[in-house]
Length: 193
Figure (cartoon, one colour):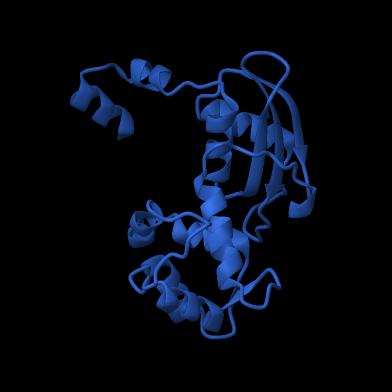
């Protein structure tokens, strides 16, 4: 469907549309990985050569996946999405604290989501309870965030969100209200007054 759209809307062949999405930089590679449902968090650093990257991934734990994510899965994932560079290293870690710290000169969505999660997690236990989520949404006037509201309705008051589920709920098309509010927000200022 996307190929047909590209072909009809832009008058380009599907192969040309695919080639137009190719990339080899660390920032785009990190963006692709952090958007994937099986990735809780990824850090991608430039490698020693142009177009080379070093990848570190914290896989998202999933009961529905037949097997845990492997390094080969990560390399195949970025290649499938258009990565044309070289993966120098690909490491999988079990804890977020073991991810390398990379400072960018710009904020990326994952950093904003992490700041939101940390603020919503009132007791700092790494999980957001439904009362914490309801308070966060109310405090920042985000009651229209249907992806998160549905968690309250579907799972009841005892359900807890980890960062992976929080990220998934806030980045789905159903939660577009939150995306619009986040464009003008930074972790240095409150979401709303």
